[in-house]
Length: 297
Image (cartoon, rainbow, N blue to C red; front, side, top):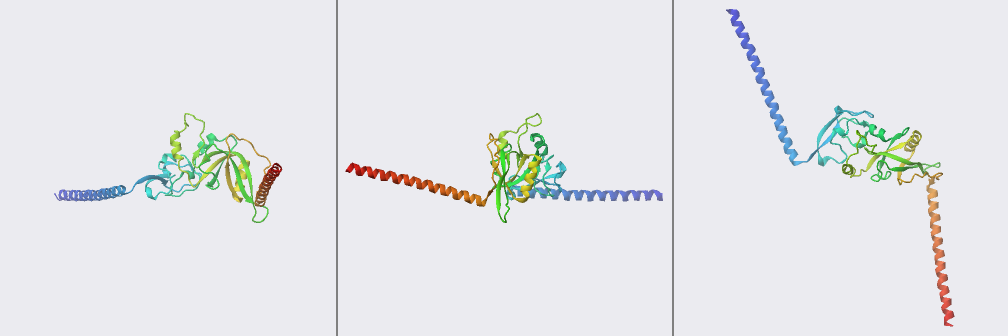
């Protein structure tokens, strides 16, 4: 009888403990649910006052050269008033399977200039060629005029032989542009690679950035030339007519002294032409006066 009473007591104790756990669990869940509802209400109120948009950021540090996967990205809601760069990406699908050109850190906003779509570049790049990327601003790269597929000359300003002397020269001629920022030259159309709608492309290209990257198609030897120029001087791009394939040989190196000399010679020639014209005019006037005197006599 005593054992039976103890069994009943243990059963009641366990039941009471289980009931207490259930009540605590219900209480905690209710508090969490109320907190979520409060946060959603506050967010809805805030969203009604401000306009938000999606921005893709790094979910973790991404090393240069890493192929970006889904787990490397996350999407944040950002107030549009705080966004100063129109090139921010809102769709993670535009980034997945692309390669990071530079190291990116957790929480960093991802922009096209920091990505490098190697697989697409390989479709349009010639055999035994290399893709070489330059960082250019509006003063050196004709940003907004150069498009993927354009032909350019590479000009450089380099240190001269004398101290503080600068020289300019054409380093490379008739070089094909593979890509501007993250926009690449269209590859030959295939079932897997069909061209985008032209209107969408124009919308993407409508805003001209203050600085961007330009990817050139060069040989290994030309890539070495560009590396040396980038380390010692400044690079500029000159846009060519697509039908002009002429390579100019034996171009002189231009210095500030030769430039001033050319300007002085041009000024002298212009002044000489003016004097000759004045002499001709004076002679004509003198001849007309003499004729008039003869007629009067």
